[in-house]
Image 1 (cartoon, one colour):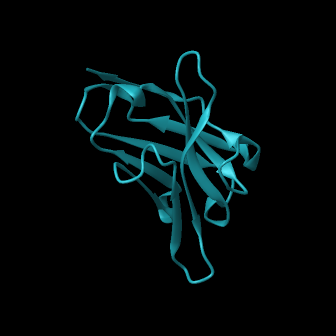
Image 2 (cartoon, one colour):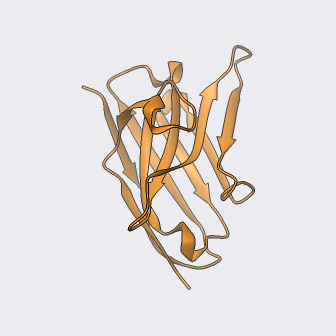
Image 3 (cartoon, one colour):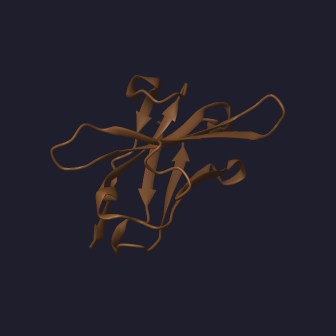
Amino acid sequence: QVQLVESGGGLVQAGGSLRLSCAASGRTFSAYAMGWFRQAPGKEREFVAAIRGTSRNTYYADYADSVKDRFAISRDSAKNTMYLQMNSLKPEDTAVYYCVSGAGGRQRTGYSYWGQGTQVTVSS
């Protein structure tokens, strides 16, 4: 059974940092893209970042414009764990953050597996 479990969310002041983790089990995740989506109250779920391996044994990362240069996505294939380092947080980053795995891309339909989500709240 595939499982994605997020951790690391919480309350932080604007300008602060948080690191989210996603522990994956049940499949060989190194063969798939992994990423993060988020959903703020009253808004649609949106793409945040994604990471996938390349044929050159490197990783390719993609970011939404709203988080580029502030967030960094990474993964440790040996631990089947993915991370999202979030710096310079803003109140508009407040949302539930979801870990995902699948074929990849910026669309929700590109991911078959979703975690339960972790709340990130940024106070002004």
